[in-house]
Image (cartoon, rainbow, N blue to C red; front, side, top):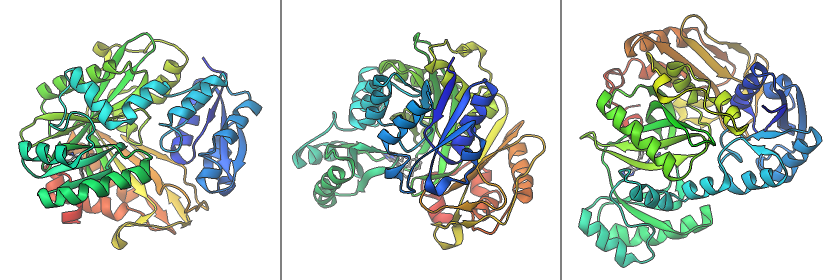
Length: 445
Ligand code: MV4
């Protein structure tokens, strides 16, 4: 196992990783920007190194600064968390060439899955169901029109370099397709440095169901069940839960096997997520895979009892997975609420400020992952996530009742947060019936 791990991130995820390191007897090295000198991760780690100015490009995205910090602190490994450099193949490559273990996927795997069209092609070959679409990327408008006519409108145009809802457009007819084809292409070139696009049949009112997987260097791959992430707003997840009320046990088993097959097809190593869309008829389709630890990983930790961060560290150190698929028992129901520094009454506008009171909830079945403390000033340069409230119950009903109780206890004063949204959804019939999908939030909130 590693002696010293550098955490190339900030906020709640940096705190979460420091906690795993401490429990494993690993010396943690935090890096921080000038805006984060009083941040919790900076204070909590065994050691902290300033890596530059507040702007992400000058600090948390600055590869030379991070590598220098790892060298100065003699870190054996770097955990990138999520966002920032977590899915950067070049960073993964640079770490290994400097003799530092990147706690994440090998560069080849990041590259294969980072190109969403290539990932789909690989999955098709591996017999993992994918959304009906063009055979890889297309260059000509002609091919787009032919495809759309064959599956009928609406269709989606997606950028190969996109993902997570970025670089995609829906079109309802030939005229719209002709226009959007070129716009999406040139935008993709500008945003992702890759103008390649592909088309897909539009799936109406789908559920977003993703499987957590773990793969070690010895070729063992397991899954830890799914998370339903259908409560989103403009592709920002607001709440995630497991199990999904939308899929049956039979489907869960089938999709879990498909997720493991998908991971196997790319020679996956590490913790990852295989995302599926599930349509009204229960048909499921692979859409993309993420090669990082995800914000919502605690949902899975609560129902599986597996510490996914510790597993990441073990896998990166070359150890075997601590469990086989048969050892995995998923128990109860968990819901995660993302508490962001945003004003839900003003279009979820992000806002910083000073936390006058921070009083998290407690008691049975409650977990809070956060970097807040009373007196902390929330900077505006970064992601607005402040805290994740994760609630476990024997079943969905208990989890919901407990969530209301925990949210009532939770006090964050001095700044606007998304807590009012969560109070609202916990009394919303559609959510209580487990029937939320895609634009539910936009339509009903
Ligand atoms: C889609 C889709 C409908 N048809 N693809 C892709 C990334 C994911 N984060 C959202 N994506 C979608 N891809 C096809 N072919 C609809 C969405 C979608 C969505 C999916 C699940 C849950 C919420 C969503 C909100 C907007 C769009």
